[in-house]
Length: 324
Length: 282
Image (cartoon, rainbow over all chains, first blue to last red; front, side, top):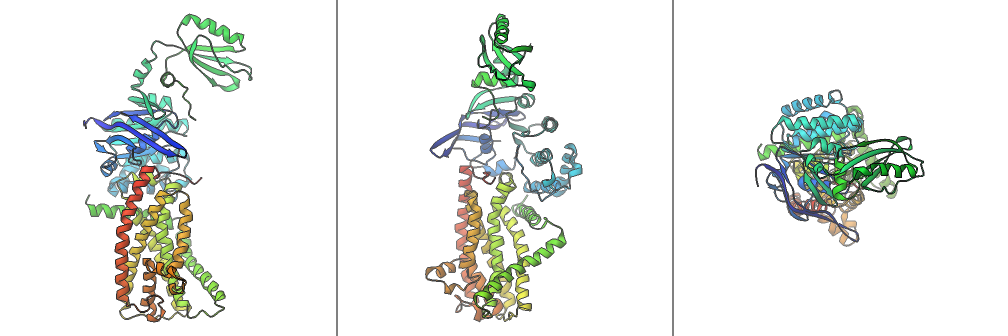
């Protein structure tokens, strides 16, 4: 395998046997993740992101196809892979609550054979970076979700992995902590050449901010793979608007003439935000008239740049919803 | 890092974790009191139950009961404790997947965790035996050279605990919440079939024979023979301690080969089915 490639999959598939049938969680996945890049897997819940990470981290066997991490086969060369990778998952409560932050981290460092002195030095360094130094001797059962996730991120990087798998690392975190985590990820990548991160997220802004390339995944299939800018170019000829409307609470906007890919998001005070694309910019006045005639009062409108959400809707053909 | 150094390092880390989990939930003094009170209270409960059943005529059985109960603690805490570790770390601490994808082998990890339970159980077990000799009038009438046989038998029997522990741990990798029921039920079955409480030759038909093929049965009866002399053995009364030791070693080897294969097979199946990080409790 080419040395510049960290992760490679060839027609990778995974099925789960369920009562009354089979669930195809991954279908013929082919990706190459380059050394030194943050590669994003963007998709709603159940898209197959975590299944792919599980296979690549040797936690799960594929049903078909092949996968390689740093040139090693995930099925047969697990130990070689495990020495060089680590993983952090979000939205969970992992850790031995009876141990302190420092004890938890030290213990995991030992599983990677890091000499105690070095491990303690590194633990102190990262505790300071994440602002956890005062909680170093606190039992982790007493930590908040955000602090616990910070500790888990330290656990993930303590072994200095060549490939780090981040599975929804900011899931459930408040805005400030999520921002700290994202900033750290960028710094960590710059700190040493050749590190690779495979990041799964269903936060579009997170993928946009962090990733060098993004694969859009849904129903176990990769629908598109490009840089964030490249993906947005798919929509370069589309005219996009976002309008804010007031309406009576019983009114629902089910269709909007002259538009495509329109989505409705509820806002505060009963207002709604409607996003849509139009082919002919001259139709915008007709659209506003239609809204007014149907009981929707225009509060504001703006022409906007495409986001990854628009790309997702364009490619997958449905709205990006977290609870899918 | 050399293989032995790596093994010791992994063992040390998982032992440290096991020790902390077992002992770090309270302050040292309370833990000490608990370590004394727990085995003694469980032994007393058993003795009183026995007294009621035998209408006070239990002097003959008391030494049998004391040694059996003390050693069954190992089975309950170490053997089934190792198995329970899989469920605890997978479902309660949610750490099993991170340990699984680290370079540490599950075999070593469980050995370290089991060894922490082993040390704590040794304290409890010895307390019961010493208490029995001092306060319950159990007569210490050991066989010749008991001081040689005792550590050897203790060591070989302890190995069997770990071996069978891997078997139940392997099962727990494959099942979900039923693991807790299985572990509890199996501990009860072991209490019965290993002759810890009732002599196995009093069992009907095949049940006694099943007991012989469980290494803990030979271990417990061997330890009785070493500490109490020849009169206290039931099934192995006519067997020399050397023969019992040989039998235990042979059973250990056979079980080790079978269970080693089974444990690795279980891990493979668990990985195939995506069970390493499953959560089924709450």
